Length: 480
Image 1 (cartoon, rainbow, N blue to C red):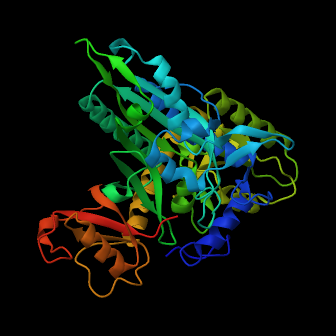
Image 2: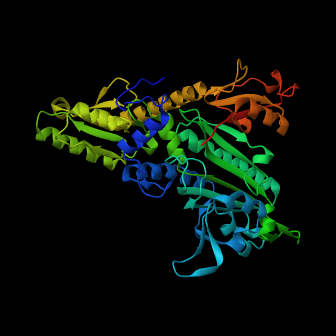
């Protein structure tokens, strides 16, 4: 367990209180806006979100995805073309029926996700084999009337900056290859953020509306609840048939395209906050820290030589692309500033006093508490890069330890009703066994584990809930 520190609460003992406090104190979001589940992003939090998004956007661009934009409003006649999709999303989709003085003939659905609006247009764009594959993404806000309790960033009604990718292909084999590419993109993305995750394949009865099958990336928060980080979905031809998206193949036969889609929201940042944060507050990986380095002048009163030297160091680092600031606050002590910037998750701190200013050196301190080092200005940038690599290793290892203590895996001794966290259980893949597991644990079966961050022995070494040999492991949990 993390010890109680300046945040005043142990995140494992009372995660909701810790989480809300750190969002407020670190100025990530303000939840006081009078529409439930729609939060105001403050500049510091939005900067962290944009830096997080930038990593994924680069991965998408490097693999040939092109950015596009499609409208927020979808006519009911378009939205309802795929019946399973309508049934799956109809209950949580906001509807615009008119203006303050006028009623519309055709109701408009506010985008909960973009399959229908995009594929309506693809029907007009895709005509021949030369038009394939299509690989597009867009960054948009989506809106869902969540019936579960909302939680800032983790479960909201306005999803901020949803990055969704959609693809179209000439064959199922090409669509399957795209699924593998998408899984690889997301693995690199979450690995860059040092987040631990399971990849599960959801059971047929709990698959994304209108899909053939889907994979989910699942992590676990300090309160034991599972969090879906992202989904990778094979849509097959269900939407292409609903929207009549065909192409003339080289053999002269007109065929329906095969489609995939995958999306990630700001939940990823919520996972970073919850998993990497500690008794001091936030702890950002260097890649997404709005401020990578804070410079704290160590002075008695105002010492101009120390201030000037600090500004020169700041300018030097900015020219190298480092996100850096000098704390010029003269009202608080250096110790107060250390706590403040640690609470806001800054991964590295540079301390500059008379000694550093007179010797052209800096003292580097790390958020993970490792010993401080004093280096020459000429060595500073390399020393910071090394520190960031080591900070990432620290976060990755601590994240894995967090996951391990929040997961129960076979062999399981004793009852499962009061288990806090995720459960890994032997499974034979049947719905009957899934229902029995859910009844025994009080948790939802999230899917079949296809990749685990912690070692698991062969499922055949275990008996399934119906007495036969298991051929896979199921992941079960209560989710946000």
